[in-house]
Image 1 (cartoon, rainbow, N blue to C red):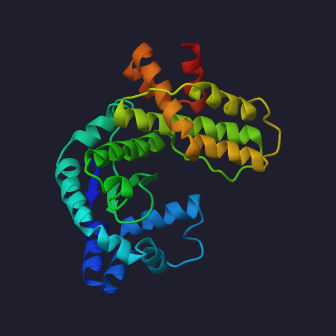
Image 2: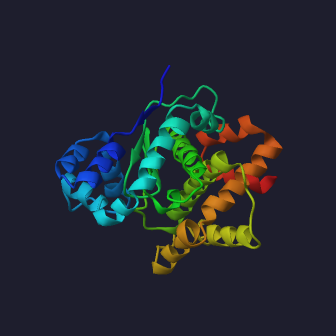
Length: 277
């Protein structure tokens, strides 16, 4: 039976670096699998690691150090909370598995880091940034929800067997990416929060953008097209919110097993299923 590994080495060494200022800890972090996980993610998705070495990448993650030192009490608190309520509990793994096909098991690591995005998934592994501003408030349960979200991503990617590339040139290729990412982020959001509530107009706006790409597959991508993608991903986070709504509707009307089995199918089927309900 495969098992998920919870790895706190990055966060623990980062705390020691911030406490002492000793750069030796940066070199130790740079040698970790957790650092390679973030480096590979940055290289693939935002070019953030392409022009730097691993030690430089780690140094950049923990810069400015004064900002992180000011947050050290919260980072230490989050580290202790994650060990007790994530690593020493089955809640996160059970919640993610509930929205994955029967028989699936995790085999990678969940890394706990300081720096980079809120959380990211790549291959069998995922990570959670204990110093992200969203985790520095009083509601530490947010860490549990984001851990479920990112862990579900690793399962989803494992079932799919691939992640989409955004090195694309046509609207048809972008439509396929939108389908995958709506499915990925929608399922991850729903697994973590089991909430698919929409604000007025969100569903209409999502499908307006989706059809812009789906109905014109041979058109070349332009700057205006990428601006539409920003609405889906960052500005209004439509593929998170609308995707979670789709997952909720399918879950309630077709059942959890049906919803989980859709992961193995082309992601366009996830959207088509919702439209038929």
